[in-house]
Amino acid sequence: MGTLTYKIKYDDDADVLTIIVKEKGKIPNAQEVGDIILHVDTKCELLFLEILKASKLVPLIVEGLAKKEVVVA
Image 1 (cartoon, one colour):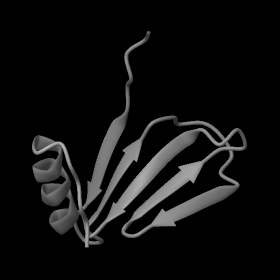
Image 2: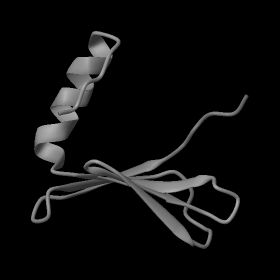
Image 3: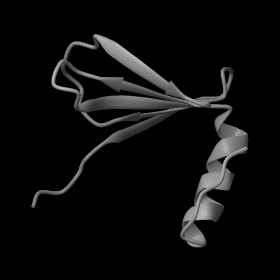
């Protein structure tokens, strides 16, 4: 299995963390799950995701992963 390569960008003015998985593809759909927006291509493969309120949400995700559980209220 190949190595997953992605880019991470952070916009501190908007407090949005973007994780780019694939740089090419049409984005016909975006799914919003709380403060996370998933952008998928026509094959429903993830192109990139945006984490809104990243400065608050990312530490909670990291802490939850360390405990092997994530609960976002």
